[in-house]
Image (cartoon, rainbow, N blue to C red; front, top):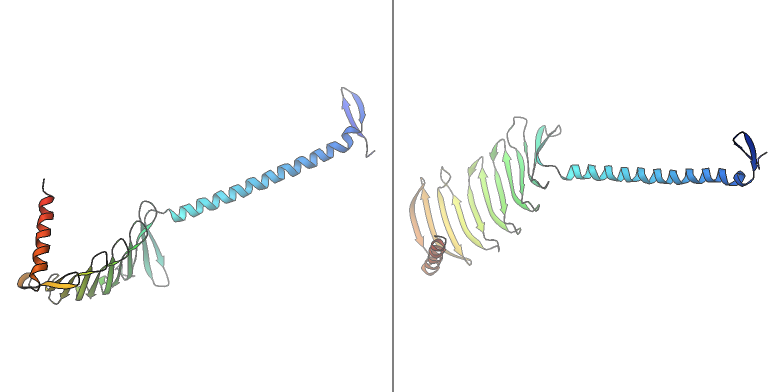
Length: 220
């Protein structure tokens, strides 16, 4: 009989309508409860796995390299200890630095951008202050310093220009600026100073005095 629930206790059969309707519903209710719990747990597990995967990707440290078949080159990505990318560059199939190189401050701001050609610096490159202002630009021709390099303070004011034209790393004309005024220039040939001209003695004397005072102030 569908409406009768037979329960045997100590060898006796007990007929009870109380269990007839409540017991099947209790089973069904429990199933739904545990099913919801299982789904909730599965969602939590999937969410945790996704978070772990994201953290593993975003918190890489050290140098990571990967071969790119399209350019037939090896791309390198270096990281700070906190996982922030510190530099990116690539080597060609011959193992020489080639293409664009980037360097970053720990907060992710660009620190440097320069270009390589088969292992040698080539083209115009840029370096930046921590506040994002241009620090200086440099020019290389097949690995040699070339053209005019311009240097700026962190407020964007020009402080120095170097025009390279020799066969070593230092030969060239050096111009110095203060508040937009060129006050001093010197020329190096063969690594030696061959000429210098003071264009504004007031500015030069002031800056020399400030530099001397600062140097003395650092002494114990």
